[in-house]
Image (cartoon, rainbow, N blue to C red; front, side, top):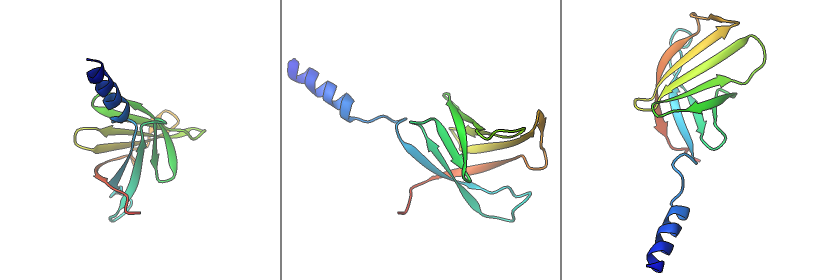
Length: 116
């Protein structure tokens, strides 16, 4: 019985944490502004951050969505909402309390592995 308990405890300790990883995505660029291309989106579950185009976002996690708000000071803010089931990303730009519909967009992402 003690051996079984030791095996279970070691399995839990060495099994890792599904949320203790960094996930890399490639998301399509805003077609309103760019003709084509993709940009990286990095999700850091440990530090609860998303990094998009050299901008850090504070992340909140729930069962179906990751939501994030840019950390930059000032009236210009960016909000991200990533659907965890289909990897659809809503990028919403705010100037003060007003949504910037010209730059806000929806796009799709795909999970990738780093090459180097």
